[in-house]
Length: 322
Image 1 (spheres, one colour):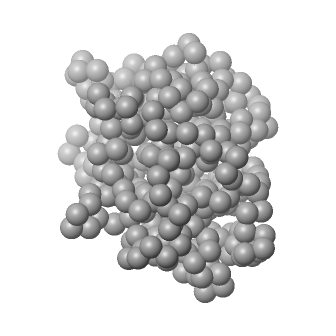
Image 2 (cartoon, rainbow, N blue to C red):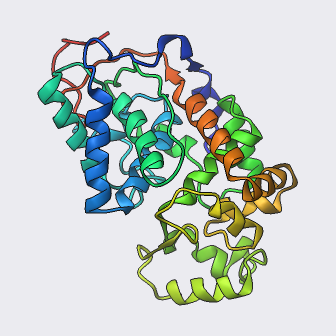
Image 3 (cartoon, helix red, strand yellow):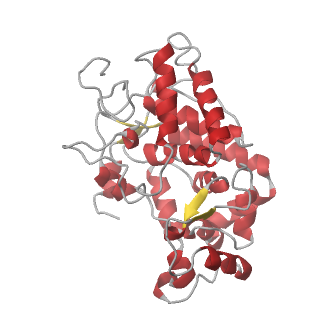
């Protein structure tokens, strides 16, 4: 991780007072229903896309706050975040946010920010796959720029251990419990062989597999991801990859975590107790996950913003810039 990391975080603030439920109740009263409708159609068209969209909140809010910077395409003068180390060949389904923005622009042009669409869509992805539903706070602005360097400096690797993750989340005023609960976002979706090759064949430079892997699960992963595999091949992050539930934590207890950054939550003492707790009590997991998502959604960066007309491109003039 870059030495610039601590300096970047000094500018992050928790701006909960600027956000509120029902922000669009007068200016675009049907905004949340529009986004939910788009997400329902995405679920029918490609169920995996909901997991992809749900992770946008993490990759957006941790990098300069929740400002939709991760949605900006590269320009001749700006390297955006889509090709950062944690996003390239990993984040997908940007078109779902495009569809939501297009639908909102038809009914409420220039009103709903792309940053708020990410927050609404992430909530809907969880709710539509069997997880909790919650009231989201809205009122964010979209950034005018993005930073591949900032994303590279901040976002953790799938090789990360629990100690590093605890430190990272702590920089954002997120607790150990928040870390474990939010890691439960891997209750849905898939990961690439690229992210686990070292676990299978060279954990910590030993030339051997991760001893934390349950033997039969390791055999399954070896078949999915042999040494000569196309490393973009994907595997399920837990045993119920299309249902948001606490199976993810049950898998960690059984040594069947897909990513190193997942399984380390059970092998590390500070996080293990929450993994056990959530594996037994799904309601407690849901409650903690919602609390963590709301806290993460409050992260803001002190910078100018706007309401983008197209989530992939900053507006070309200063209208609706604040």
